[in-house]
Image (cartoon, rainbow, N blue to C red; front, top):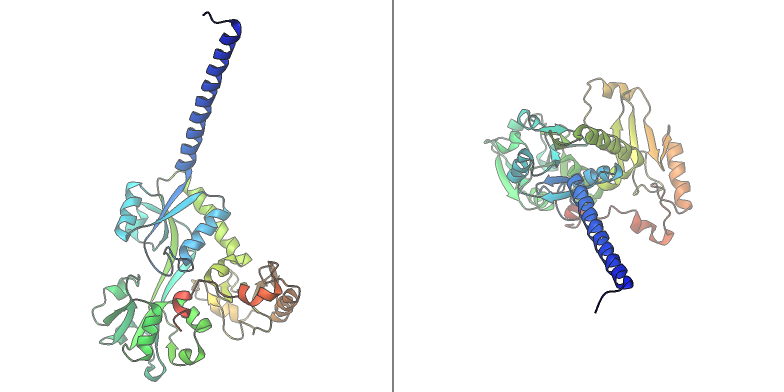
Length: 365
């Protein structure tokens, strides 16, 4: 049976549809491949509470991922052992690292953001064993509680004079300290701030937190040097972190009532988060508020003393605590939290809690 004109047209139409489908599929695969190639492959090691898989215990990862998302940079994060992190960055298998301290060797293959967090290792002791702390060698022969797997820096890890007692959790180490099973503990300033804000009063009254840091290390987001447009990505990241500090989203991730930054003029600025409640005391008078970065210029602290602090809540700047406190009070009356989110008044207390950020510490008491 011979094919007629209509059957030939049908055959041509079928071929065109097939070719169109193949072309569309190839185009889709190409776009998907390009999209995958553009995705920033970020790595980190297991370092609670800064980089873990558990919600609320990945402060550094949350800060970095939020900053990149705000800058419209597509990314994915993977946790690996520390040696695989560095080797993968050197080989080009991975593109970036959530958090790294600077060193001459690392600067040979990584380019760094501005610091977005600061690791300050603080000494914590008991009220009945108070010392005037200035140097780590004062702890020679003392039992010092550390958390297994945490990075304390070579000043601590290479120190042979202290007796290191390893523990599983920060809360466990605090309990050992109170029970006099260790003489002191070392912990990050972020955990210290959480202790100040969230531990029960009877526990806090047993503790002494020493001002002088044992170790100070700025924490950076870093890209391998040969990553395309790496400098532009770092510039976007830096700008995004600055915006997060200003709008309170940085502090929301940390989970504190206030964070404190010192501007170039030496003026202290207190930035409130969503758990600032009406009737709260002036954080400047209470010396309250987590200092995000240590002052790098020696004259900044003296400059700041001669100038009144500023406050930022509700995406607004205030020159006095009275104005800031009134704004917080008015916002709560209207059912709005300091982060300008409309909330149900019945759920207000629940919404203003710290979430899961410090469950690794608070949940133990």
